Length: 309
Image 1 (spheres, rainbow, N blue to C red):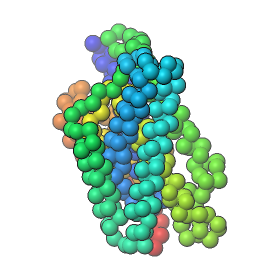
Image 2 (cartoon, helix red, strand yellow):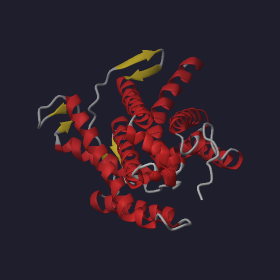
Image 3 (cartoon, rainbow, N blue to C red):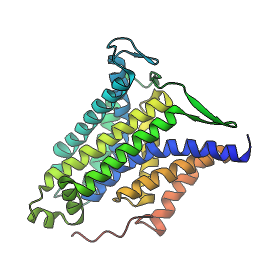
């Protein structure tokens, strides 16, 4: 493989990783932007989403690339899997916020963040007890179509993953920028008390941010399963840390920053894994997290948050 072909292949691989990390990072950034809370349960909401998607595909009788029970077109089955997975994980996020975090909203200090760590381990152990620690294989529904550029390969699944991710990101951007609820989210992020006085239902906005962020985590879990064809109970930790790094790199609380950070972390991981090995790729990625936190805590596109006290 020539240098150009190697670069192209790593670019393709990096964009695939970046698509997943961006969707996952958006969940961190939405919640932090409104509540200034790092939601560590987000790691395993992603993992739960992958298993929900796996269950939906199996219930609909997906075997390889053939739907053997429902007889529905493959595109309909995948669309149903996305809708069910995103709604289910979105409701998990709403439940976490409404039942567990809302009572702690007036409590200062790290109590809420520590609670999300506990919730993350609860989700982990529920799946561990329910399905076990073994790797579960996804069906392989996407057609094995590919295009070759020398020895570099672009597969149909790559293009579909990019397309789905772009649609979800554009949809989120439109929602936040141009809808009434989206404007309420931005107002709450800037000043919750002022937003409340202007008639914004802050409690509903916070719940909505958890729903959207968790739904995107579910979509990322499904994309992971379709791309790698497996789900495993410990998959959330590694992907979640990278997505968190992406959110910090782009500017946590900043939606375009989360997208940019996800793509950059994906490209860095793909390139460094190929050139110097996966272990060193992890060193580079988490060194970036440390460097950004020390020298530019607001991230690439973020700005210093105003004091809301």
